[in-house]
Image (cartoon, rainbow, N blue to C red; front, side, top):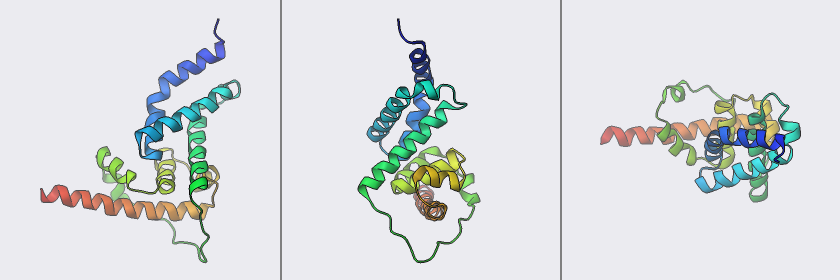
Length: 169
């Protein structure tokens, strides 16, 4: 007879897997890496399910695990160097909110570095504050702000390029 807690975990996975995969895809930029990320996060969640199932939002727990796994990957592959002066403050981009074509945004997001993409996903899709993002990513809030600012600028540039190609066709 299966453990009742694991049956509940199986139901959680079955119901939330598509959303978790989409989240993983936005974080990683590739289907294969998204699958690996979701799988690893769900394995860790399954092992801790007896604690997680009593939390208010098990999906948020899995998403945080996914973001932290991405941080671990970045730390193994790249190093961040401090700067002498803090970057400019982030600016709200109302133009970005007007875009409704998810396909163009997905393509543009894949053109961003992984850490920048993660900051934008955590800020705009998960609605996390800069301090929360900094905690998840293991960096300073100023780094989050600079990554978001650079990421939005790059998205604007990439999306303007898409608009120009569609407008000239």
